[in-house]
Length: 338
Ligand code: PHE
Image (tube, rainbow, N blue to C red; front, side):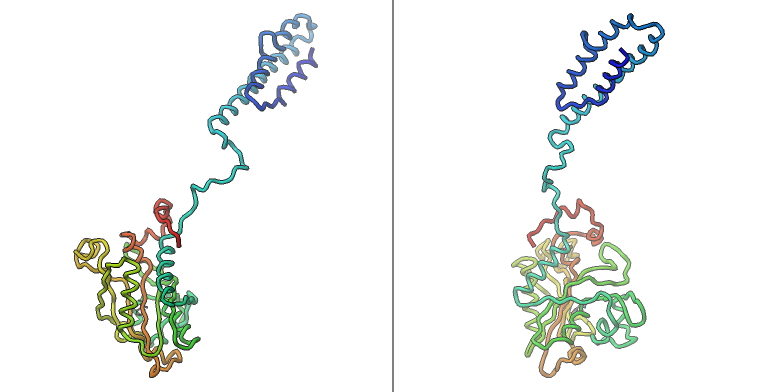
């Protein structure tokens, strides 16, 4: 009898079920009215007195073990049912509900690149750690000149800094090619500024450069008008205000008509009807000469814009820090084909 109980105990322990019905069968087989346990209890009186204690304990053990195993198996079946067919089926293909989306800055950057490549601009890139020559000196910033303070710089050593604009890439392009040059330089730039809703110490620029014979300010204006209409819509107007940059002469700042109030005046454009989007100008002859281009033969224009600023206007985002937080709820709102 002892062996029989031990055999049953081992069977219960190893018992596996494919269907819930099999668990019920186990219950009937062991715990049922005519089950093993009752049968064993019935023949318990035949057990020799000196073995009664041990056999009794084994019988109890069989009862408890069987009950536990049944509860265990039934609850795992219940869970399977609750979670449906997905229950731990690792072979299922992943669902595409959670596909990521492109970052809004990438979407806007790609759009800017797309707009300029349609009129023949190539893309050029350069290093983020720049030497003094490419970031400042070649661009007509005299040494120790306060104009260098316009862009609070992160210096690495006396000669190197994190680039404060991608104009440095344009210097490299001019040094290494002969006009005509038509290129845009997208990239990350760094300025030692306090982080706020309107400024960050890291941001993104796209700067453009066009050098050829007879390039005029009218060409610059027309190019920027084309860009503004492509970016913000056919009805967009632009406005140029005189400004100063060491590397362009004359220089201007460009505003676009506010796409929120269509120029009527609102909070975003501070009731002026216009929003500033970029800086531009005719490349200073000194810069052309610094880069080995004959300024008596060639003229050119340059412009530079902040990608964050364009994205804020395009999507009406009022805090620049949102771009850097990578909050999924924010990022999920941007879907794009480019
Ligand atoms: N490099 C300037 C800036 O970062 C932008 C600019 C580029 C202005 C080209 C004029 C011409 O602010």
